[in-house]
Structure formats: structure tokens, C-alpha cells
Image (cartoon, rainbow, N blue to C red; front, side, top):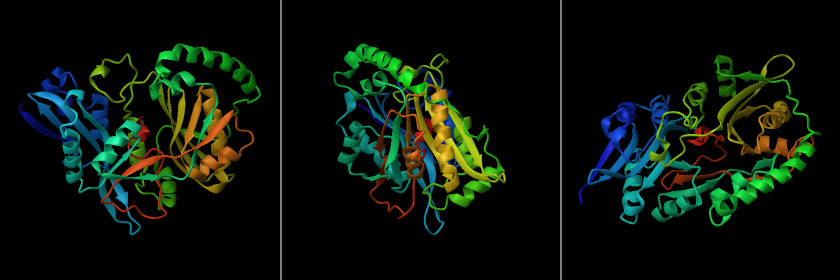
Length: 364
């Protein structure tokens, strides 16, 4: 069997998704809208490696994707790193070292500075076996539950859960009736905030005053990029989603960004959220102490207004503010931690932090 490989650089992404090869392939390594997003990444350089493909007799049997990023050290030095955005090997080709080859190529191109987030337990087993990464965890965050959502939470875990999804839907409906009565006592009153659809120079100055302890220090350029180039589109769009094994469509996906101000009109906070189906997630937050409670209540109010079933926040300070707020409408909260896999050749800076949406988490 003839095995060949192909590297696709950032500058070639859009042309690749418009090619005859892409149109005729039974499996594709990226969606067209994700390719456009990668191509407009403000931190990507034209010759950065975006995709590495493996073919067997002309058929695509494995691929890996990367998002170029900047990592800042305590001395202000900015290093080029990559977030792993996808890794796939055809089931018929597994066990032949293709995953190792894919990861080794990405690691070599980015000088062993590779990070991973949002990984599944199954993929974690693979990463551990390869020995490329070590795990890092964030301080405890919070997941708050507003409405019963068993039919969405449990089936993806596998086992017998998918088989009883109709029963879970019925359970959600019954419990939802009683929970709805409970929520009548929580009027979704929104605090005084300013909703924004584009982050401007004033917000950029605010970010720069508060992001010195972040690993990636995303600016308004990166945050506006996320807003303008989402990876998830409605399922009725003309796109063959079955050819791509990663997230590319969602019945409901939207961003919500707001700022807070003090009595003199000065910015005190910035919050960036995403809502996918019924799950509201924090993407990015810069909050002064006086803005924490207002931001926590705005998040809860927005979740209620939008019919969200659960809210996830990994930011430790904001999670604490939500947990302490006696007006919070959650019927149950629990501590959660975000996990990252960091290249074993890489030393993280002490006392630095990730933002909730770092890597590709902001897009999915």
C-alpha cells in the first residue's frame, strides 16, 4: 500500500477547501467555515502549518489540525505555540502509528510547543500513550444547573444512556414542569450592562491594563476574530457535515458580550459568553473586584432569558461570585476544573492563568 502525506499551510487553506480534491473526498479534515476562520487568525502567519494529512492509496486516512497562538512569558517574551484543534485516524488504520506521525509532525513544526484543551477521556488515553503531553488543571470553577437536561448530558457519555434517551426526555419534561414553578420566583432582571457586538479601542485599553498574568493575552483583535468567524453554523446550511468528524453545525449557537461600568462611567468589566444549544459558557472575562457581582447576575439573567439549562464558568473569581450570590437561580451547582495538555518540553509560567476560551474552546 502506498502511503503519502501532505502539509497545508494557513495561506493555502481556503484554496484547499475550494479544490476538486476537497469536493470529491469522502472525508474532509476541516469545514469551509472553520478554514476561513483559521485563515483570518490574527496570530497565524502564512506559512504556519494548519493541517497535516495522511493518505493510503489516495484516500484520506488521518489528519491533524493546529491553531497558531502566541504565548507570553514573565519577561514579556512572546513565543509561537499551537493548539491542537483536531486529530483523526480512520478506524481501519488505527494501531499503525499514524497518530504518532501526525502529532510528531505538528510538534516538530511548532518546536514542541503544543497545547491541547477540550479533549475527551478516549483521546486522553491516546495522548497519554504517546507521551507527548502532561496534564495541567485550572483552579476550581463552577457549573450551575438551571433546568433539567439529562437527555443532553447523559447520552454522549455512551453505555446504555443513548438507548434510554426517550425516557430521559420524559424525565426532563416532568421535572421541568416543577422546576418551571421554582423559576417563577426568579425574575430574569438584567443588571445595568452594555451589550457590545464589536470590541473597540476603549475595551482594548482596559484589556491591556488587566491581562499581564495571562498565558495568551488575547487582545480585541483575537476576540473580534472569534465573533466574526464562528465554527458552528445552522444545520440547514449547504454543507456536508457528515464528511467532517468534528463540530461544524449546531441548531443554536450565539455569542453574547457585555461590559460593566462604575458610577463615573469607567469600564470595570468585560464578559464574553457563548450559548450552544442550552449550555451557556464563559469564553473570556476581565473583571475588577467591584464588577464581579454584577457580572455574575448578568450571566444568570441572560441564561434564564435564553432558556439555558446549565452555565459553565472556569474563571475562579467569577465562579466564586456566582456561588456566593444568594439570588442565583441555580437548583444545583458543582465545582469543575478545566484541563489542559501541555507539551512535555514546555515549562508553564507560575501564577499565570488561561482564559476559559483559550485554544478552540471559544469556537465550540
